[in-house]
Image (tube, rainbow, N blue to C red; front, side, top):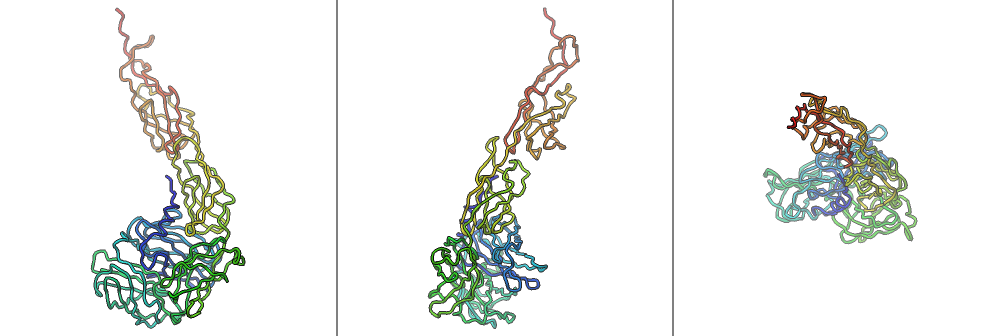
Length: 543
């Protein structure tokens, strides 16, 4: 069946529950970070509370000894709910670009998904988890619009207000949890109204960094069979940095085309709502919005005044206009526009089995969606210059080859390229032999039909003797079908033809045998290929 999900995925990524703003990625919730040795993984998402049936971006930022891991490092994503957009499966492997690997998780309905990312580099393995809660109805559910303040000391005791709407319950039926540095602790809920929940933050003496984003989980109605859970994307940060000092934790995505205009979400803390400037290298970007702990900008083009950024990795910094303070730098890479240059294994049988296809080019950025001749393919791996995908079964309208362009789309930027051709080859069906070719007066119950173009799975073969269906039996193969002999249409015994006398066998009828491959819709007919016989009767004497 066709699996073209590009438009649906792109739409789903910009629609969702307005909990902590639709563009605000989140740091790891409970168990949201982990490492073995010096390998560390941080997870972020574009929406921790997406609408059921939609998708949300997830980015894994992987560092080794504090530096980004080499490009092409494999990151394995798994989920216990929903599937990943690249392949429609609950697991996918994506390689890093500039230290980050990006995928998109899609939820078939309402439910909570625990996503785990794992990577191995130089004998060290690290993992991290994040919770995504797909919501059943964004129109009637509670939502969080802002957090105030957005930063507090690791000693705890900060009175944090979660502003929003449709809140319900009391302080005893409301729970707020904070996860920072892989540790989860409960805050003390002090007030609950329909528009605000106030909580006193717990202490995290283990945190030593100037700024550590915390994942906040708000649970309403803990006394109900199904409480409402909201995952709040980095709405609070623990640290020693001054609240007016901007700090960047991650960029989503962390790369884009030289043409610019890529929508980039900057995750961090200390961003001044009164106004900020964002610079890509020395070039200022257009700020779309500033909310608690996140800024959305459009990357500048790497042409003209930004020519020094062409195909370069540059520092992104945030400056609070009022105070003049500047954030730490975080790397962003400008890349060529997506382009397809070549392809391997571009002719494959429509009925399978399929082998992986390698698409060569540049500008590829995970997550990507790929279609081959208009049929969605399963993405197995992504690097900047090479994609590996597995074709899926085409929907055939006739016994003819299906050919068309290869289309690759970078999901989070919308950048797309069309190039080279792919063909699903439909093999003509041919019948080469039928044995035995008669029913022996009812003693033959099975017939073997040999030929070419039969389906890989023999159960997808439709075999008819005349107008009657013959059932395909176990033991059949792609080149040899063993079928049952259906009863003939003639039941009246024919007259004996001399020198035959009763009960000699006489031909009762001869029928065509037609084989149809349901996978390709191709068919072939062997004319008058099978004979039914019956014991003859003495001819009626002529008066």
